[in-house]
Every structure is written in structure tokens, then in C-alpha cells.
Image 1 (cartoon, rainbow, N blue to C red):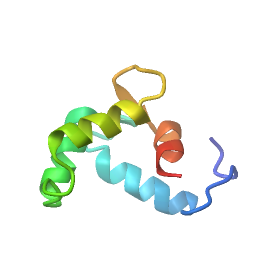
Image 2 (image 1 turned 90 degrees about the vertical axis):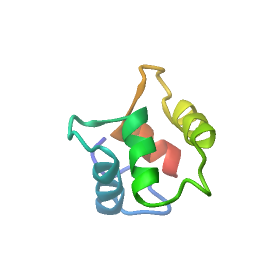
Image 3 (image 1 turned 60 degrees about the horizontal axis):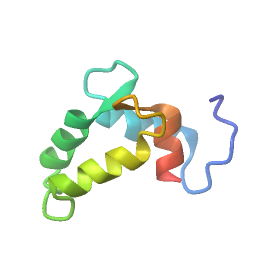
Length: 78
């Protein structure tokens, strides 16, 4: 993704910053445990219980490889 595609709600930089916050090990992907961890750290588990986080993760993981790429993240957020 070159940052010029349609990103209706967020700028490329905003999306990258959000993605990087979830990508704790900086490997270029968000794994399920990273997502669960950040929800816990931000005290969002009341709004996003684990089963909701897991469902969101499954929906965002378009190619089913068990991790969310930046491109998948952009599609899920927008």
C-alpha cells in the first residue's frame, strides 16, 4: 500500500500510528495476543471482552494467516 488509496476516515499517518501501537513486537503484523494485550492496557475490556476482540480479529484477518497486516488493518478500520 502506497498511502494514496482511499482512507476516508483517517490519514495514512494516523492509521500507521494506530497500527504500530498494536504491533508491539514491531514485526509488521498484529497478532491476536497483541490485540488482546493493548485492549487490556487501555482498560477497554468492558467494551471489548475477549470474545469480541477475537471476532474482530477474525474478521480483520482477511487472508486467514493468523495475523493482521497493515493493509488488512486499513480495510478493517475504514
